[in-house]
Amino acid sequence: MALLEVENLNVEFRGDGGWTRAVSDVGFSLDENASLGIVGESGSGKSVCALSILRLHHRRMSRMPGSRIRYDGRDLLTLSNRELRQVRGADIAMIFQDPMTSLNPVLTIADQIGETLRIHQGLDRAAARRRAVELLDMVRIPDAARRVDEYPHRLSGGMRQRVMIAMAIACRPRLLIADEPTTALDVTIQAQIMQLLRELQAEIGMSVILISHDLGLVAEFVQRVVVMYAGHVVEEADAADIFTRPLHPYTEGLLRAIPKLDHDARRLPAIPGNIPAAGNWPQGCRFSPRCALAEPACRAAPVPLDALATGRRLRCPPRRAIARDGMPEAVV
Ligand SMILES: Nc1ncnc2c1ncn2[C@@H]1O[C@H](COP(=O)(O)OP(=O)(O)OP(=O)(O)O)[C@@H](O)[C@H]1O
Ligand SMILES: [Mg+2]
Image (cartoon, rainbow, N blue to C red; front, side, top):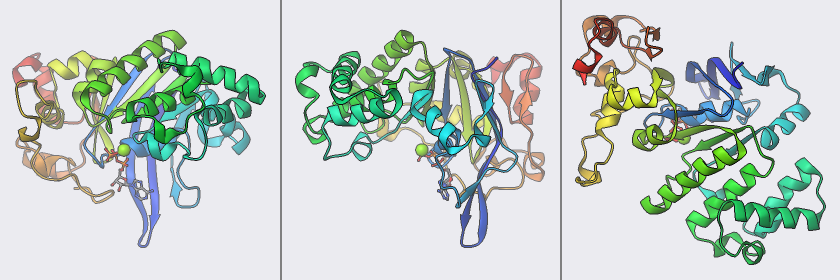
């Protein structure tokens, strides 16, 4: 049985003119101890999906019609608030992009980490502090016994993100959702944090969902990749296949945008055009206005997400026809 199964996830937000759909019919599943990446440009719906899993959207300003999110056999969308609080942190933990806004500036590291431990594990103050030092050791913060009494502003960005990770793993979650965990960090620190996450995943034996706009980073870290565009999934495949044989023209565009070592990252060809605003999607293929391969049929009607024999899922009939003819390599 899968640890997490997301099915037909639709997320709508209330605005002045009524409800706007930000994410539609998203589905994926994740086994115990497995890793999944969600990639896509800014605004494609990655964070909305992640926040939906823990039901972190504003209650009255959002709704999720027809959606199902099953964790360990339980439907997260029908849990009571009390059950949901138990799942958050203890079973499923989350880390975000900006570690400064998520840390409370007036609490020491010991108190921030301790709060989670006192709530979820009932530790007293002294025990929570001891455990906080252990956790800082686990995330390789040097001199943990001293650092634990410092305030967040004394730490570098990379160290703060390590503290966030320490808080996330405090209760040994079975699933960690990392939403752009390294985007605010420079490249060397980014590599160190990814290495740390990899080691912790093995040590704790947890599943990881890694969200990023950087397909290169994701493909290196996870087993399976979901590519999102304009609020839905356009391709899903094993990381190695996505990287060597992208089928969706959008995935290809993302791959081309990965900085190469011998190029200046800022001069790489981005995908021309812009991602449409939430709900403001073309009626045919949502990517068709930006797609060099779009045919009249692509623009005429919504395009289904097809399951291919190879275990891939693809929302692009022209490319699917090529893949079926057994020459997917030819399209790269
Ligand atoms: N609370 C909200 N109310 C209304 N619209 C929202 C809300 N949250 C997100 N959206 C819209 O949903 C769409 C998807 O946003 P989301 O934050 O999931 O993108 P993302 O893929 O995480 O992008 P980024 O890479 O910039 O983090 C966007 O069009 C966004 O404006
Ligand atoms: Mg986001």
